[in-house]
Amino acid sequence: LTGETEGWYEEFAGIDTLVKAFGRPHVHDGTYSSFRARRFGAPADDIAPERFVVFSSNHDQVGNRAFGDRPAAATRPLAALLTCLAPFTPMLFQGDEYGERAPFQFFSDHIDSDIATATRQGRRHEFAAFESFGHELPDPQDPQTFERSKLTRVGEPAGMRELYAAALALRAELAGEEAHAHADGRALTVRRGPYRILANFSGEPWPLDGEPVPTAGEVRDGALAPLAGAVVR
Image 1: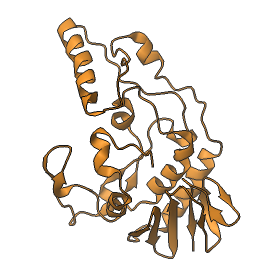
Image 2 (image 1 turned 45 degrees about the vertical axis):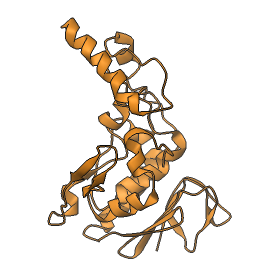
Image 3 (image 1 turned 60 degrees about the vertical axis):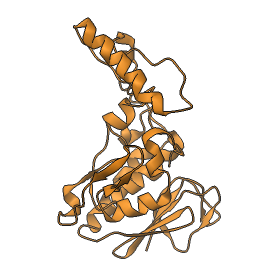
Image 4 (image 1 turned 120 degrees about the horizontal axis):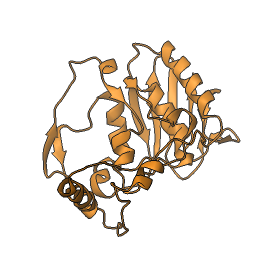
């Protein structure tokens, strides 16, 4: 969805990991992690899917980014659709429901100067695995880092609240339905009960073969635009 492949993202760049994630709560369920250079995780097939929480962003995946930037506006509708219609329990990060634009940066308020210094150094070390990163990080101890992270209540793109409402209403119909996912190139199909959830991760339009309800992103000439999704019966 983001197109990022550096650091810990390298293990989740392929659509095959998303296919697996729809059917099992953990992509790493005892498999080898190239980022950690060891096997990681454990299977959880004996635990009901709804006991796991799923999200497209949270305080870690946003706040622990170098600049705390949220997912790009163009990716938010599709992320919302997939999160709400996964078989797991969805969680929204603050502002997701309307597409908050403000970043959520890593901030701290350590009184001990040694701890403050260690925090700054730790942040710089964390991004050593990102070859493209060479910028100065926001200072976690600077009050402005906190101020920049406050919600503005201004979001984009338009229609996010309505999309979440429609997706969550449909989710109620799908309670207890298993998810069966497969990929066709960079296009994802997830079948749950009588519905198919479609997501276009390719750079080309993907033809629809049904009436979409609801849609996430742009649908034109009967096809899903890149980074768009829909649900069809």
